Amino acid sequence: MKIYYENQTTDYFGCRDSRFTTLPLSCTSHLHYHIELAFLMEGETLAVVDSQEYRMTAGDVLLAFPNQIHRFESLKREKYVLLLVSPEIIPELLGQFTEALPASNVIAGAANDPELQDLVYRISDIYHTKESFRETLLRGYLLVFFCRLLKKMELLDTKRGDHQVLDSILNYCTLHFEKNLSLEMLERELHVSKYYISHVMNQKLHIGFNDYVNSLRVSAACKLLVKSDLSVTQISESVGFNTLRTFNRAFLKQMGMTPSEYRAQKKKEGVLVLPHKGEREE
Image (cartoon, rainbow, N blue to C red; front, top):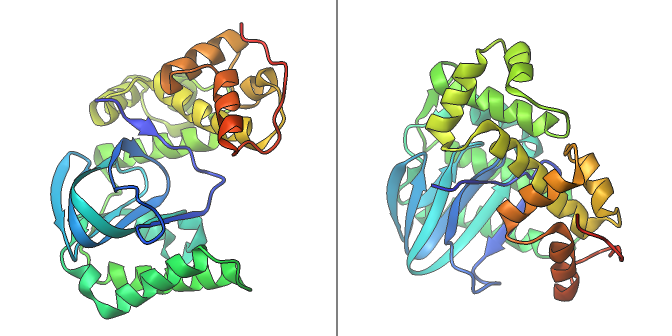
């Protein structure tokens, strides 16, 4: 199973609302440090979180905690709101989201709660407008929304076993992927055997350590290719690759194209901020 790690350390909040898009909920298996919530008003979706399957129907809410592997498969056209929230936006709840896991990721019928419906639509409407105090309003509504939602969930302590080790690995790599990371370095920093680290990653993520770190670096590189005018060589160095050749190979493996081709494609789509010309692939 291929799992894509979305490195979103610089993006605090995102919202997708079926009122403003025709995109379904469907997405491949991925994980990230953000909280991801699917608020389903109509339709039907198969959701999988950490190998647990949930058949979501109208009225259900799914909440994936940071670094939980999850995916969606649309079964019947949905009416939904999808939120992607960095835990740092609501630090009052940081402990709940980083030191616990839900007994069940789906809260049946929660989307029928009038208060939660009102809050989620307020959040979406504010996100899609440019009104005054937008960021402050979003943070306030998000805090109230998640306080109300978490009261409907049973949370389990995760300060133990493989999950704690995996969470420590993922958090450390997310914060330090631009460095020359190795299993030996994590062994020293986390005081966990490098063999056990490798075992946990392969067992839980079905991905090797080097491929995982490279996926973080490539994800960060994608943002820089779109949002900066740094050269491909400069981006390669800034995200932690030792050589341009290694960067190009890792990028091609994950994205199916070279960094320069990716930048050219985004420029064609009109999303490139500061295009850099004349790049040469090696």
